[in-house]
Image (cartoon, rainbow, N blue to C red; front, top):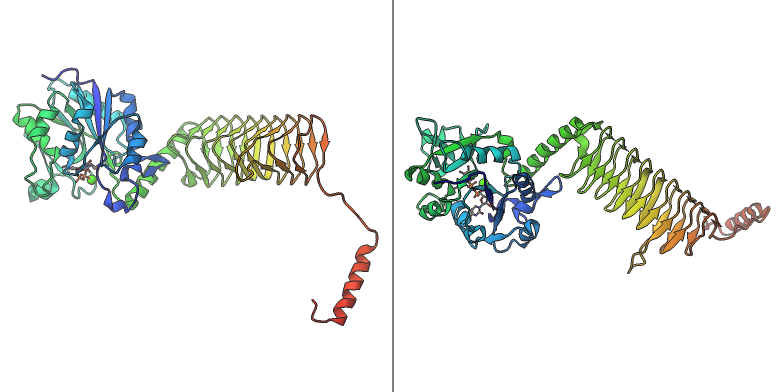
Length: 455
Ligand code: UD1
Ligand code: CA
């Protein structure tokens, strides 16, 4: 008899070749909003706190192994079908008495709430051995069809290739995802044969086998959009668009203004505070946190960065991993910040590269300032104290430190530390010669007349 179906484990099938992607990368490693498809599956599964999760992969899928680590993987040497794939996970799963969720690595959007519904349905009075996640897609295409009995319970699943005309007319389709009683999963799997149109071991046969064993089976339905499977680059683009649409809506619901939502791209883990304003054409890569009241103007590219309250970024700014922008700081157009702390209220408004730097509060970084952080072999840090002023077009050759309140003259190449409150100027002395321009031009004019080919 089934026991505590609320205990959950999961098997994620990901051994399929994904030939239609035409890619060197395993299909489930392709990204949606900067997160791999299998990463999305794991993220949606995590709140259920599964006791064990095993991904089934093909032998040449080390990137997937790394992606799911420290979770264990099971190797399916040959792709003999979905039931065979699940069987490959047996050893890695160990004994599972509760509910085993079977998920597909290329079906990234099955929501946590839907997974919960499957688990809850398993716990209902009729104790269904298998709960299948069904859908009614606009185009049922080649999906497997869910055949119900007179009571409306799930009787069997018929694969499209084997389906009769009447069965093909059924609109209720198999998403592939199911929740199975762990106590009988392996026994039923052993009974599945491959004498069918594709010569594969169909996991879908598990329903009829459970019924033959006297157990009930059930269906939980979810919207088609949640069950979208990705098999090609075109479908990947559709999945991306769908996901971005949801993220934009969530951002606005959470209290952010998006001036042109359709042109803002989020990563799966982007965090926005309240009263954040995001201009058009802004791209968030992975690992970005934005505090309240930050303004991100048009055309910024931001990844791996944190932005504190009230900062103003862009237009046309680039924040790279490790950029930490303090409260009220300004990062202006064509400024790139990498692995640097920009202090509270500091300003770098134009045309700069700030890499591996600590920039003091309320300092002013002039247009064209470059931290020369790399000598071709090693990287070094630049320290700039609070309220320092760096003149335009200065090169700060790291490792170097500019003290608090110091001023660096425009155009300087700073190679030695500058102490607090000092003025440092490191550029060629200016030489002016009165009247010499006029004299020079006259001489050149004369030369031109003598040798007209000189222009
Ligand atoms: C499967 C279902 C079908 C359902 C459809 C929904 C079966 C027999 N059919 O069909 O009813 O409508 O999904 O998309 O289950 N995989 C392995 N090893 C294998 C075979 C598959 O790991 O040997 C993995 C794939 O990587 C993929 C998933 O299982 O993630 C589904 O396999 P796929 O071949 O796409 O199944 P479908 O034919 O689409
Ligand atoms: Ca498929």
